[in-house]
Image (cartoon, rainbow, N blue to C red; front, side):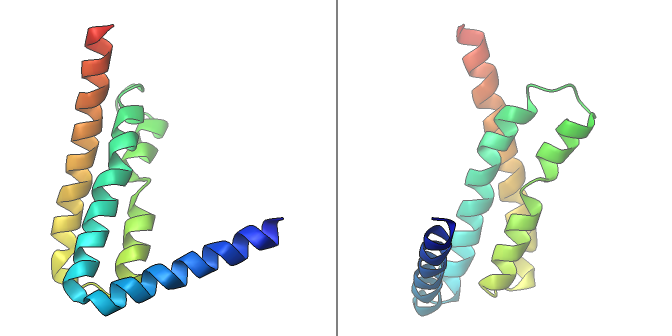
Length: 107
């Protein structure tokens, strides 16, 4: 069962990579930016539940960085866009925090 899942994951990986590589470099930048933003929204929600400057709080802030770096290298996006990806990750954390506080206020 695990082998079937692994094979499917590899097939999806190669299909996505082919789509991204054929679409051009600008599409790769958009994909990494979307991932940086969307991954950090739930992390920002979860981070808001913990006390500031604890280990879990710190890990939730930095949890998406290995994924974003790996995706950036895998899609061969230029280094000049790293500040954009960092800004989108921070924006995702901020949006997630605001969503969590708004939900808390309505209850």
